[in-house]
Length: 528
Image (cartoon, rainbow, N blue to C red; front, top):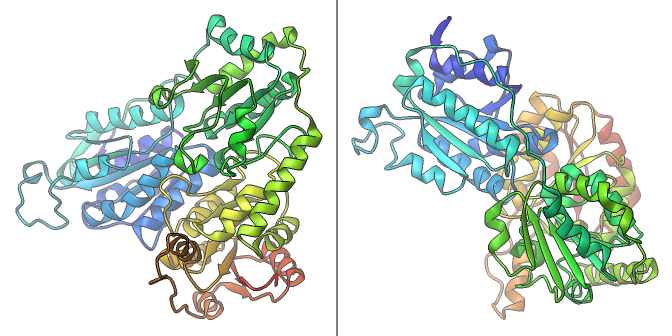
């Protein structure tokens, strides 16, 4: 059996488990992990900051459904990637972060070692599913396989494995051969029948879908349509249903959605936390039968429900579709009423954030239907997420839960690497873009075809509005910005500064055909 330093064996193991790309930054503490990257046949993407590496891994994972893997150093390297880890945890993204740590005898000793932390394992554990230390090669292999198995069978949340420097350097045998991954199992008929009976007897059935239902989107679409039910989706589940019909879209954050949901006699929530950032109110609004379906048992117990079903959403959908013959599909919902309500909510969004929707509509018209969008925490995205219909799931990715700034650009780089010649776009605000703007150099270096829409309202607009609403004199919400066009050119990227919606569409079309990234600077006054 071939002996190599464990750091090299880890790369070979990951390759044998289907990993193709590693995001990261080498340092003196984790350099052994870089010994085997090329030999194993992995592609390494050199970020300009570990936060960028983490967001790239996140964007790659969202685009492919495979784990995004990052290599980082002890101490500051791990601390820098903890924000992306927290975002991946909130949004159920499979990310595996492998870091070095101090030698076994130095852990927790406080000797002033390079990159030393009081307790690195615990620090990382605050923003991921679990954080554990591999004290030898066998432990490292077991933890990697545990992480990959949990990604395949449960809720997809980030994991952190740290390995002491001396253990990375020590010779180790190759990892065990891959075994067949376990997949989510069969759902008993009596469990599915609880949901089936509720639908069959309902006059106004209503479904709420979250990101946990996306893998079964095709079957759920058939189930909901045949049952004559209406549907809402969270931002994470946008694209599960086509525009129109009995679909209310991603409008859960509209206050009026609570009244619609209260009018339903059966509400079924599938694969969703129903979190604060899904609803922006305390309660969903249901008053009748309420059924929750989720692969995460912990999520089923945070609010009262008629029935709580711990199961894979896709399996439930298949069983419901198999049983469907006994329901009529005749309900009290009408497409006219749904369309009128959606139009009312669109007008509300337009009134709350004037000038954004015409730009969003123009941008959408210029993009191919299969474009994947990565957005940042910016007013443009907040408005567009409520009104932008998607043709399929997994086409818009937003840092919903943790709500970090600086997500869009590096995440879109990860997505563009995964999607190769397929269209990928980043949408960022002028302030949030400056959190991770250095990663533009990665897109230039890799010659990624990546339009970057930079929405500039010259301020922290959402925070200013919030301060005004709270009767606080706006403070520290206006900043001086650089010349973004010159900045892009200095990095070697293409640029454009359209002054009309027609010019915006032309710039987007050109950017989609340009080798390398294009920064498209959009002044917020463009639609006025």
